[in-house]
Each structure stands twice: as C-alpha cells, then as structure tokens.
Image 1 (tube, helix red, strand yellow):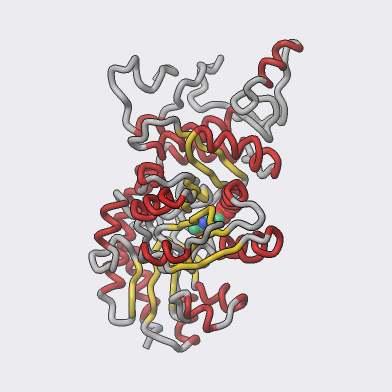
Image 2 (spheres, rainbow, N blue to C red):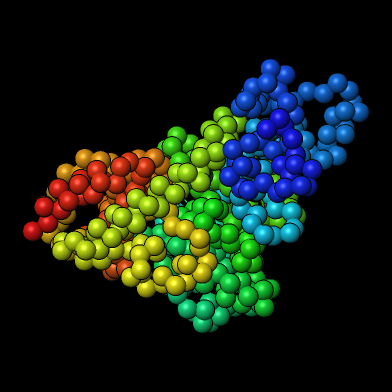
Length: 410
Ligand SMILES: Cc1ncc(COP(=O)(O)O)c(C=O)c1O
C-alpha cells in the first residue's frame, strides 16, 4: 500500500488484519522506508512564532514535546484504536502509557475523586487491588466494595449514592471468571456510573467491550499486544472526548508516557497479533483439554473449555480465547508441587504472560507472602494452583513437557 487512506476512496473498507499490517494515512517516507522510522526525540522545533502557536491550538494531536504527543506513539495508538473500535460509529481513540499499571491508575484517577465509591471484583489483578486499597483508600478517602462479579444482583446491591465507577476484569485474574458486560453496563448507565475494564486477557481482537457499552477499556501491552516479552506498556481506549480529557490531565500531568522505541516495537507486534492469537488459542485449548483429562489434575480454569461454568457467556461476549489458563494439581504436598514446577523444561518460570514463550507461575509464591491462607482461599486459590501462559511452541512438545513433570505428583 502506497500510504493511501485505509478506506481506498470508500470503495472497500479494509479488514482489521489489513489495517494492522499497513500504516494508515502515513506520509511517504523520503527514502521509502517500509517501516516508519522511530521519532526518538524529546521535542519538535518550529519555523516561526506562528507555526508553534498553531501547533499549541491542537496540542493533543500535534507533536510539540514527547510527553504529550509523538508520531511513533500516535501511530501505535491509531492501530490499537482501530482494533478496539468494532462496529461503533463514534470516534474511538487510544492513549498509550509507560505500563499497564500507569494506564489503570490514570483511568481510575480520572473517574474518582475524594469521597467517591468504586465497585470492583475480589480477584482483579493484584496490583490493581493494591492501588485501590493502599492508595485510593488511604490517600484519597475513596470507598470500595468487592463482589465476585458472577451475578448482576451483587453489583446492584453494592451501589451507593457516591458510586462513580464499576471496575471490571473479564476474564478475571487467576481463576478467569467472567462478568456479563452487557448487563453491567445497562445497570451502570441506569445509575449514571462509569465503567472501566481490564481487557488484557481477551485482547481487543477477541473482546470488544466498547461495543458492549463499557466507557473505558484498558490493556497491559506488556502481554499479547507486545507479544514478544520485550516491552512494558499500557493503553486506555475510549471515546475521543474521554481520551482527550485523560490526555490533558492524567496522561500529561502524571507523566507516565510511552517511549517511542517501545511504541515502534508495539507497531511491529500488532502486525502479527491476529496470527499469534490464533496459535495461542489453538495451543491453549489442546493443553487445557489434555490437563482436564489427566488423573493428577483436580481442576482446569479456561473459558475456552466446553466444561467451563460460564462457557455460554464466553461465546456470547468473546469471539476467541487467549493462552492464559490455570489448573489445580491433585496434590497438597508442597514438596511434590515444587518438584512438578521445577522439572518443567519448556514452561519457563516467570510472572508475566502473553509472550511467544510458555511460562508457569504458582499464585501461592506471591500471595502467601502478602496474604493470610484464609484470604488466599477466599480468592478461590490453593497451594496446588498453577497458572500457565501457553506460548507459540509446537503443542505436542508442550504436552510432552507437562506429561513428564506430572509424574512427580503421586
Ligand atoms: C491482568 C493484568 N492487568 C494489568 C497488568 C499490569 O500491566 P503492566 O505489568 O504492564 O503494568 C497485568 C500484569 O501482569 C495483568 O496481568
């Protein structure tokens, strides 16, 4: 494509795979570089008083200083907004941050002020809970109610006159329970409450929360959007008015900007998102089915399985599943559990997920340092719980690795 508009004179609207492979509406590089050079500069200079003054008239969209706007970052943002837009007619924008947590904290701070109340889930990502409990509560006097997220009634019962935000994560961390997004957004709109979701697990390819009425969608781009375990980044996606308001306040003033070099790695990754997700999904389903039928496994949590308790809801609000799942070993002997964990060869031990490589992590390692066994159990977790990120390797090799290590569970 020679830098044409992505609708090709309105004759044919390109599919999302084409938009992520090509760079939309870019001016042709003087050397014809097929990949946009990285704008690795902190500031942009102008020919005159009039020119810089004109740029300030639209400083959200004009590169003046990289903490506000940078062309490499803006290109990555455009691609992510295209991915998330789906069938929505209104203008959608994305804003990239230096990490997923930077995006989460900026989003929550945008919606909440001192004295407000937020409703969220018991098992959202740990640092998101810590941001609410250890920052918003003590420093801003924000109140919080935690619900399991399974029933709509719980949300309605938790709503107070000062509730300003319902914060979701579907599927949720560790045990992957879903929330019914359409029901919740209908309820929230009735009460005039904003909704925000961590959509990292499903990716904007497989779940489009904005289409289901969610106000603000968030992703840790350190996971599937980056996909190669070489960047830490986060993104917020929403209506143009909402993202512009976040841009001038929480983005620029808290300053957790996205680095141009990381944005260029992200642009590279987005070109293969569709291909990678298809392989992650295929591999994860085969691994989940293998585990489900193994005598040493007590339970598998994967929304793609037919036996998943919310399998119907999964197919209603998602068009696919990613590669992160958890399972419970049929063992409570910590020695055996550690032997299983340590003898895996292809599943490397690590905390993140969503990259090309398969990983394993046991929630007990981190949580038991910070929480009592009773709090841990309340999250629906036990010592034998394992979380795996199924990567892009040949799935038979992954299953052989698991089979060999499961011999340690007697
Ligand atoms: C579900 C979820 N949300 C958010 C984050 C935070 O993202 P980041 O590590 O990019 O700050 C993570 C990181 O593991 C995560 O698992």
